[in-house]
Length: 608
Image (tube, rainbow, N blue to C red; front, side, top):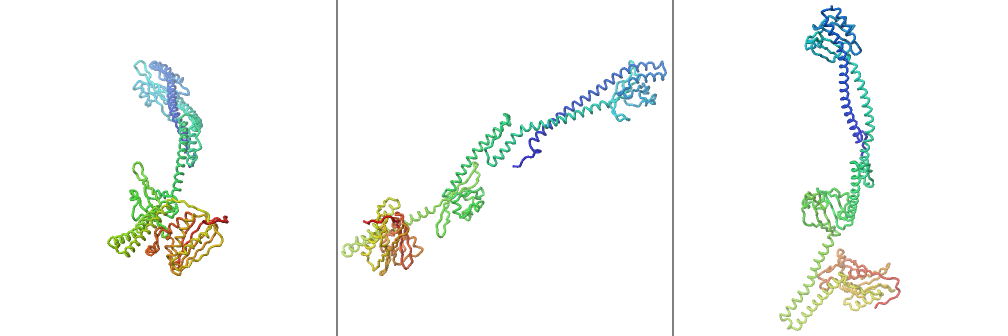
């Protein structure tokens, strides 16, 4: 925040306002005082002149009454003597004028030539006419100074004998007023100086708490809520400081709560397995969490500001307005050639209480496994139905034939019953395998483990198959001569090996071979059973452990398989913390591998 310059600060404004108020007050007071003082001085001056004029007026009147008894020269001398006593620094000139406007005498030595001449002064004419005193302040033609001119009638009873004309120097009064005004101006300047100094100090009492609050607001803008505004008093500013401190505490609490909620939200978004995308009201992405980024294969910076419909790849089918009004979820297929990837998108509108749409939240849920499970379930039901329907259809056909009379023919009836018995055993095997898989899926089984010498154990199983083989198949063994001890459930591992060897025998031609190999590496026993059969196409090798999967369905079914043997084998090996897989070359044979953990510290043991 930019620092406020002093000339633009509140403190300067307060000082200026304070000074302007003082100036206005002093100007009003000064103007009133000057006007009153001027009026008083002028009034005093005029009163003083008027009082002195009264004395001369009486003497002049008496002299003018004698006008008939004495000659004009005597009257002029007497009058000059009388009005000469009025001459002073204040009175510039005194004239005596008769009723015919003729100047009888003047006190101005330099203007004696005007005696005997007619006076043309308007004040004299007005006084003689109205028989009343007339006065005014005028500007002297010679000195260019202000003078008070007064003309007063001389009356004897009701008769006007003439007038006395006085010109008084009133400039001295205005000179006094000028001096007084200068004193007032100096006093005003001094008062303004003192006012300014006091105003600065007084304004600080107001602006200092405000400055503290401004600094606190700047600190709060940077996230610092630890500072507090000092309270200087209990006035409105002090109460404002208290309220500001309270606001700071509430903001700190709100900030802490908001920050905590933000961290929680960030943590939730970061650790969610579902993808979350939030947009503004125009459909531009504002927030996107890591799972959504990983799904879309882009960084957050690349996603921000982009259109939601474009990012989700649905802009050809939906607009952003369509998604706002979308009530149902939609599935998004992000599958790649090597891996399926299906997500369900659920939309939730961000709205104000007024109904104004602020944006849209999209939750992306990975339903790949769910779709895969649903697909497997559908395939499983279909396969089980197909596997059960085939023998049941066969049995029904032969039983109907027996019912229609074939049972009366001993050889044919015996053959039909044999087929029905074979199909029944096939269904029993299928149901038994399904129950076993169900128990393994639900973990409703226990491993009865024991330490055995795997080499001796493996040889006995191979011997059993070698003695019972129905084809000209050679069994080749590449087994260690030293004992290798493993902790296994012998029944379940026997079932695994039986399934693998049975498949190898089924799909190996006469004259073929089956090789048995066992190696030990780093506490892990690796078992390989390799045949020279028809092999498996490369793209189908990884699927032979899926339930009901057959490379050649027709041939496998004719050989009596249920399609569950390798699936059961995989579950059993995984239950022993091992791994099982296959490698094959089409037309050359297949190798099935599985591993078992073994303990190298056991030196002796016996398989029962």
